[in-house]
Amino acid sequence: MTKDTELHDVIRTVVKRAAFLDRLTDGPTSKRDLRDELDLSRSTVYKAVRELEAHGLVAETDEGTRLTLVGRLLADRYREFETHVTGVSDNESLLSVLPDDAPVTTDLVLGAETVLAERHAPTRPVAHIEELVRSADSVFGVVPVVLPQYVDLFHEELVSEGLTADLVMEAPVVEYLREEHADRFEEALATGRLSIRRTDETLPFGLIATENEGLVLIGYEEGGELRGILLNDTQAALDWGERVFRSYWDRADELESE
Image 1 (cartoon, rainbow, N blue to C red):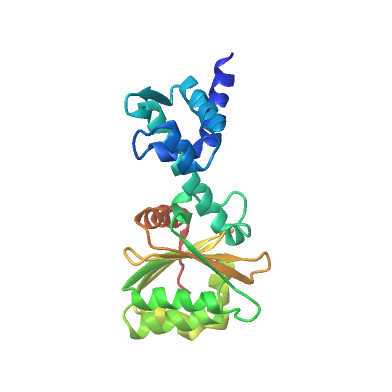
Image 2 (cartoon, rainbow, N blue to C red; image 1 turned 90 degrees about the vertical axis):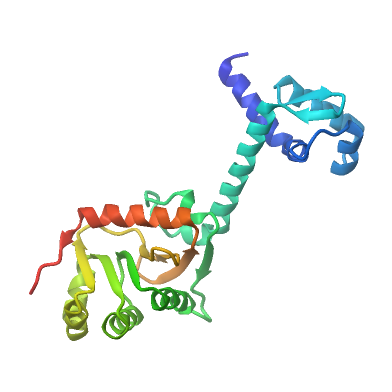
């Protein structure tokens, strides 16, 4: 048996016998208890234990079948893998509209919630964006698309509520704001609390984040229609958001005065 074949056999055994590994993380037990608790036949339990023993994942002791150190480590990793698969699958409806090379990791999706724009409630995601921005003292993010609601929200918070914002905008967004919302755009800039950098890159998503409150990733259809948002307030997601924002910010250009 080659090393690769042996490795694949171990992986298959961990996946196939995950229920046994999960039960044995609670401590040693008898084959009879495994049979009763997992509702399996005697022959299935004996076969599973033999397979696990063959790969050094369990051992027989006076207390019954127990996990070895190797078994415990692999069981932990398998549970972690399952958690990551669940996080990705639960948010697939929004992730599917992002480009395949979008700089997304599982740090973003673990513990996240997706809210989609639906026919009967197309602006539901915007309400969550508003809630995050209104609750924050400062935000940072990237902006590939501008909606009228965003203009109203940020103008009010910057001018009247003391919000501080650092934003990377696609070049067409900057031009649109200067042409269609010139007065409010300049008034927001005049507060000194709005810092904008302009990028010629095509941003793969929108992102609004705070240091402590959480982040909102905004997904758009190819034509710019709002598809939905992903909400996450875990520290891992916030750290991811900071890294992604900083990478775009560092590559973008300072906004030139007109």
